[in-house]
Length: 317
Image 1 (spheres, one colour):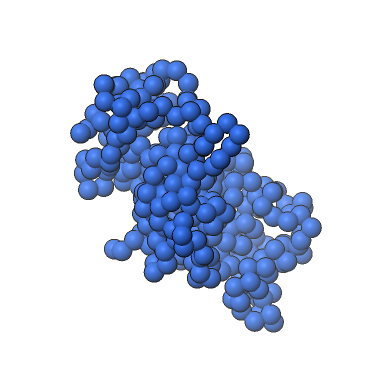
Image 2: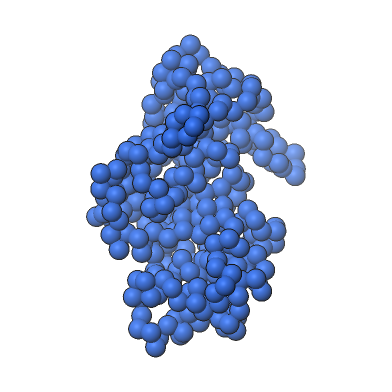
């Protein structure tokens, strides 16, 4: 199956008073139709910058973004209307992503108008259809964001993304601001929509346990780079990169059987380096228990362990 989205050596640097921040530094991945790629990392790893660069919030410093026949580079940053329509985003905080002064009808009307999805006389029927898709009552059309709960706001944000019939939705921590029961409802809603419409997801999160249930493949980011990328089964059964194993070993569990399935506990050394003063070589080497001489001298290249698992670590050269 051909790739729907392909990102090649993507870089996004920011100039600050303290120096250059390499927020995204040579990231490559692909997503196929109907697939969910989980992009996981701690705060500051660069995963949200990847999302904003994909949707056009930032222009890439270098690298390429391919979506179907459309290509975006630092020299060709103009995105076609089709590209913009086909890649939508659902943000972490639904409260800040919805205009509090607009009704739900006005919020959902906007993408329909901009992308000329349907004639004006058909918009209200389309909005009611969207509300039904995200399991919200039809009378919500007259409500305002401040009248809704957090989960309901996020459902409206999902409906807005669906309004233009996208092929790919970027989900930037879409459940992190919700309580546990509402998290489950939103996840089930997203999975149902994916099945019904063949959607692809880039699911950005720091919650690895969530990825076991929703992703086709998982990519781990650390200091702007991908450490490991693998299909979900291999990722959880055979994690390779020391940072990946460290993250998995720290997942809370509720039974002894689950504890036995986790990698051996890894204690990192030191603190996460400053993004404006990155270490040479592998960015994880100052904290890595498996460090060897080459780690602080050379950035590791991707080593394909299996067709569906690649690790960026000198240990596997």
